[in-house]
Structure formats: structure tokens, C-alpha cells
Length: 252
Image 1: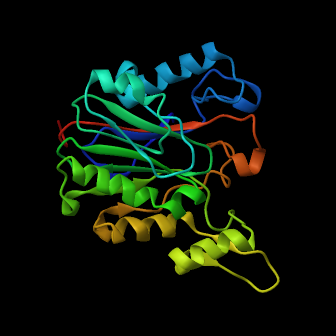
Image 2 (image 1 turned 180 degrees about the vertical axis):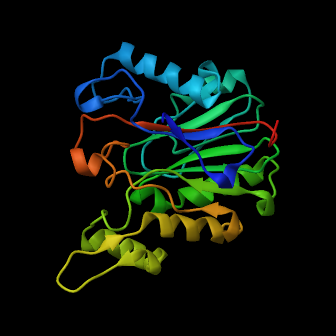
């Protein structure tokens, strides 16, 4: 299966790519859609076309940004601005332009897709740094700024590293202790772990998304090597996933 979806976003075109169904080989096998770590450009291009066909979106109307593990927002408002989004340093891409897709690339970090069912959509990239900096809330606030109502927002977290796999140092754990203490898991004699799913769920709720409308139980990228790429498991020079959501009214 090329794409997995979330029931929280039923009626909204969206998806989280897997590593299956592409043409890349070696460490990029097989559906690598990221171009940053050395895969053959023609293979990446072919994989992206396959993903767009499976996901039902126009590849020429997909917009991403240069992700920097922060909380800055790139807003796609028309074709002119959209051409510059790819050069923007941002970890949230937002639009309300019908038929336009926004997306983020990941290989363990948490992809967050948010939609209001009326055409306003956001894709956010939440690693631990972005989570601490408030990227989830930034996505919500950006949608509200273009007319979304908080009570109508629905959010889904995509395939990413789980708490059991995400061992961190004390300094990272301390950042989450200050922000979302319940996301830190400690056991005597072991290094702490951080639950990025719990942290981002709570931060989305704190930003006004109803808890019942947040899907925070995705598959773990590190636990499933046959289905997903994982930076933590395999190191650099591997494939990446794309998470995307398309502007348009739910069911439209």
C-alpha cells in the first residue's frame, strides 16, 4: 500500500506515504519521495508521480517548504506566492486554495495534517525541536487566521517514531518536562523516552482542537521496517515519506 489515511480526516483528500510501491533501490527502497539524501532524481520523480496518482492530487499543485525544525508558517494564497513556498524556511504549510495540496517530508518526525472540512488545510513537521517550539499550535493559529473555526478543526498524526523507540538525553527530556510532562517516560536505570504523539496531541488540544477530533495513534516508523523509513533505525542516506492534504470542502 502506497498511502495510509486517518479516519479523523474522512472526506478530506489526504495521505501518509509508506515505503512500498516505488522504484528506488538499496537504502531508498522502494517509495522514496525525498530528494535530499542522494537517491536518483529520476526515481524520486517517478515515485512522486505514483504517490500523486494514488493520493488523488495534482503533483504540480503540491507545495512544501524547506523544513528547519522550527514553527514558521508558509501560506499558499495564490499561484504567485506558491511558487516561492519551496524556498521558504518553514515547518508548516497552509492553504485554502481549492485543489492545492500542502505537504511535509518525514522519516521519524511527526507529520501533522489539519483540516476544517471547509477547504482550509495545513501540514506540519514536528520533530522534537519543532514540538517544543510550538509547531502544532502554529498550524492551528495559521488556519484560524484565514478563517477556520477551532471547533471544526480535525487533526491526524502520521507514521512517526513511538515513545518506546524514542530514547533521548536528559536535556531533551527536560524541555518536555517544562512543556508536556506527561510525554516524558522514565524508568530507573534507563535513559528517558519522549512520547511525541502525546505531546503533540496535548498541544493541539491546548490550541483549541477538540480532543475527540485528534487522531494521535499512528504506526511507528522505527517498529515497522518493511513499511516505513526510519532515520533513528537506519541513519542518514535513507528514504523519506510525504504527508499531504488537499484543500477542498469535505466530501467534495
